[in-house]
Length: 389
Image (cartoon, rainbow, N blue to C red; front, side, top):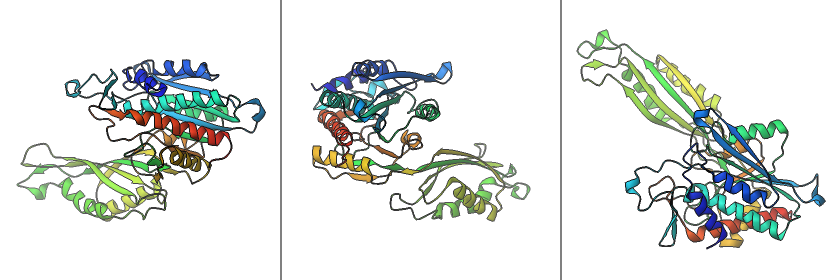
């Protein structure tokens, strides 16, 4: 069994459901300290939701002092809940091998990625102990949850210290069929709203004595659903607006609803801003004279990494290891890359296939762990040599 696969097993065996780390970071910390990393545990959040974060760094060889770039591998040790245990073919926290696959919660999201970049780092430093590249790892136990006391807090602390980061690889499962066939070089922004429409409740037989909140909303809703918010960019598809929930009424058939509550979300590109989207949506409501209030939440701002030295190093490493010409993508949901992009100019996400993430019987193909480890090691070699190609 490969070292990376064995480490993935050790991590899967820990029931680290958000916000619990369950000792995963201690396993990583001990391995990193053994190869010269300085490790720091940063804990945030209330006692009822205590989040563990590990910041570990190894400075470049002395010959590169003052000029070395820093590459950060980032990820999360927490996993989503298992769902009904009786539906699993094996215990989700007992790593199990069947048909060439490793099964367990977190196998693909994202304990195998963590194992891969830890072992890749060990191999790289064994061969090049004085490499002119600083290497760091940032791990959190609060990515699958609220994400309020994890990576975002560590990024704020690094900013306070004046810590400089040049490159960052987040080990999220970005691939489709084989590791490296797709990477994320950006993500769309997320803007959510809870719209409350205020009418007057009444009897359905006397509609002239009521104001139906659903009827007040309907014309505006139709226009919002048909609106083209922008045309996107070269890196992003057009912004989308989707209703996620609509609730109105008392649950009986003879009462006109006096209130309607609509939950919605924008996934937006750099062609729009939260402010511009808010203004356009409010203009539609005002046009249709909808009496309302809105609570807004900006979940993430969009970011994109241009095709610079990091993207070049990742693409060439994937090609050399797998023969694949990787696809750059900005689709999908949000990740902690949104926080790292605020302090690092070049951020990409690269991980294993995502077909089984969050599912019952989550798995990773055994060979994907070794392939991913080799890709990460090749990236270290390219950036450490100062040549992305």
